[in-house]
Length: 302
Ligand SMILES: NC(=O)c1ccc[n+]([C@@H]2O[C@H](COP(=O)([O-])OP(=O)(O)OC[C@H]3O[C@@H](n4cnc5c(N)ncnc54)[C@H](OP(=O)(O)O)[C@@H]3O)[C@@H](O)[C@H]2O)c1
Image (spheres, rainbow, N blue to C red):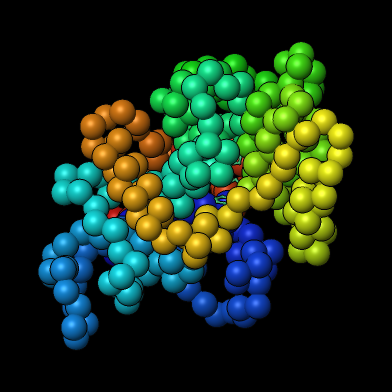
């Protein structure tokens, strides 16, 4: 293992608020994604050699020094790419890329609102949205306004301003990984025919809601399409999309590796951490205020 990202989703998994892993009981090894170097090959594996650099999204198990992976789930990591930057692309940036281009299928010039814009997925949505020629707004705490502007979007201070009133006529698309008030105001901020792509429920986790409450929020999104106004809402899950379209996951991750290799985008790594710092990293993720990703680099000595 060379690098494994730590993400807010790890907090959900640890608190048993993540549908896919909620039945797991401790002890188990966490770690959502991995960049590593092949150390051994299983019988019959073709197309890979010892020493090849590869990536996978594993959901759990990658905060480890070694692990076993299925060859048919691996994506090659180009030589020369920084391993921590490469790790940020697996869950976080692939989520943002698929939200834009697979779920919402955005078009140049559309007016788009991104919640949690200073967060990991939020920053990736702004950077990739800018490449796609979108007109972007981002909600974040006031202290992050400069970062949001630097990423090419208009900042909205979520502690002071009302994003529903910012744009007369409403947004074409809203991306919401927070779920404040069960996505109601995000839906209200859409124009006629607009699309809400919900993908997370950090606000519910912070407020210590039960899993059932969040599942009700998600189910309700699909009922709202029957309301007048022609607005639509859906929930995106990277795992559900990977299960349906495994080829898209590999294709999109490879595209992101290319974008970083050519310098078209630059993911922010807030800090590279060692194994000893993982517990503290979870506290930092829960406290908020980070401006980039924490990445476990097992070779790092404290
Ligand atoms: N469905 C999927 O496939 C998928 C994939 C990846 C992630 N996710 C989910 O998406 C969510 C975001 O992930 P992430 O990795 O980007 O988390 P993150 O790095 O913690 O970012 C979340 C951001 O939201 C901000 N925030 C908190 N409350 C807010 C509010 N009321 N209004 C606007 N912004 C607010 C935080 O800002 P402050 O720092 O100012 O508090 C933080 O910058 C998580 O719930 C995660 O589980 C889902």
